[in-house]
Amino acid sequence: MTIKNYFSKPNNWAKRGVAAVMLAGVTVLLGSCGGSGVSSDTGVQVGALSLLPGTGSLYANVPFTFTIAGGSKPYFITTNEQTLIPLNLTINSNTFTVVPNNPGVTDVGQDPKEVPSRSIRFTIRDNSGKELITGDKSFSVLQNFVTGYNLSINSLFACGVDSTGKPVPAEGCAGSESVINLTPTFSGVLYQNRALKFSINYGEFIFIDKNSNPPNNLVPTITLTTSGATAPGGTIGGSLRAFFRSSNTARTQFAGMRITDVLTGLYRDVDFLIVNPTITTKPTLIPAVLGPLVGADSSKCGAGGVDVRISAGVPPYSITVSPSSRAIVTVNPPLVPDANGIFTVSATSAPASSGCLNEPNAVTVTDSLGQSASFAVNTTPGTGAPVQPLSVVPNSPICLLNTPGSSTQIAVFGGNATKAVISRDVTVATAISGSTTTGTGTTATTTTSPTYTVTNTRPATTPTGSTFIDISDGATTFTLAVKVAATCP
Image (cartoon, rainbow, N blue to C red; front, side, top):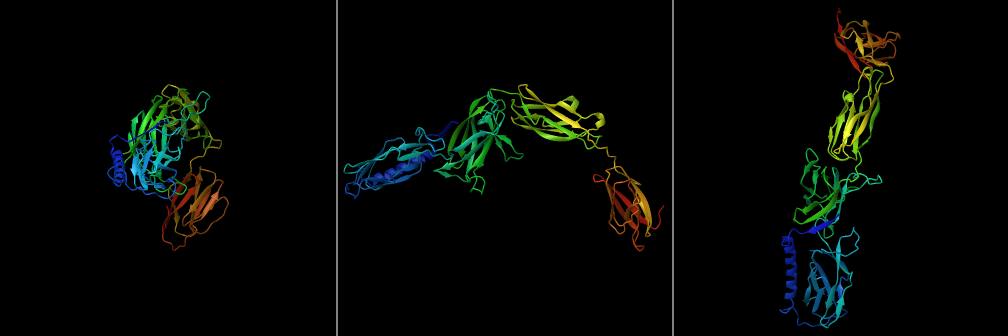
């Protein structure tokens, strides 16, 4: 990744402001030395000529104050980097302040993780002619831009494969999504709760607004705010994450974005590489088959669904269902625009009598180059006997006399083998076992031919009215109304 740092223009207010601060500081210092810039005070201090601090890092555009000890006044001060710190100064004071410019050229061989910097050397000569020259590496001017240096750009997915079949990492990959991780700094301090605007300089990509409604709107510019204080075990305070998508048809190319500090208008231009895989492989589907899906019983084919990821190939991808599978299989969406995109395959249940599906080419995925991959769907009947629908005879309200002990019978057919009959206010018992259950709100369970006797156990003084019996096989519940009356037809 190539990084270029700018102030927006040479006459940018920020540079003029820095220059003004520096000029003002120099003017004050010179003013204290008389019209010629040299004081008539030639008093001798005690001790050897020295500069404090003796080593250090100076941030560009940030004032830094030095102290001179020993020697005799006035002092003449200069640097070996006049463009970086334009200093030819005579002072009659023990302190002087510098405001370094931003180094455009930095020291060779620096660690890429370090803030880029340029070494600088100071020369100080006192009134008696004694001279102090700092070491070549004693002081450095660090580049200082509001958008910082801890920035990375990475594609969320591999960008194709190389000649050995290994995944290729990339900053941007045609048709895929990338993430920008940034921790902006100024003077070495992380900027928390800071608004930064991302915009396109050039190249075939666009930003993704994760916070839009609906989410993931594609936008040419986006403004994000860095996080606040570091959360325990969470995001580092002062960091942010942005996303962009490279065009599906983007050739391999350099692209550029601008990151602007909204408050000051200072910006940083960042160049990165978008890769369009030169070794193109046909699409691969993960997984490549749905099933075998087993039906609930021998009369039904299985049903279900799965999410399928498309790997390799060149987006966009079109997804079609074969004519022989359309009665059972559906896909959503039918078009996947991005590399490593996902679509869903669903199979509905069908009667076994019409034939289950065992189709290796049920779904076909075709990329923009015409390369294709097939997805198989396999459904099969269950092994258990078919279950007949649950039914009750009679299936209309039954009548009981409002007399204790009056009863009638009901028969339950179909459904699962085990059934539960739950009564409300009347007793339910199995006629086959001959058992009698008294009380209210009781349950009878049977796995044999389910014929039930319904008996009124309510006191004779209970008013007439209606109640209910619930018959359930675990999958279906049938509610039978029971009328308690003085007379029944």
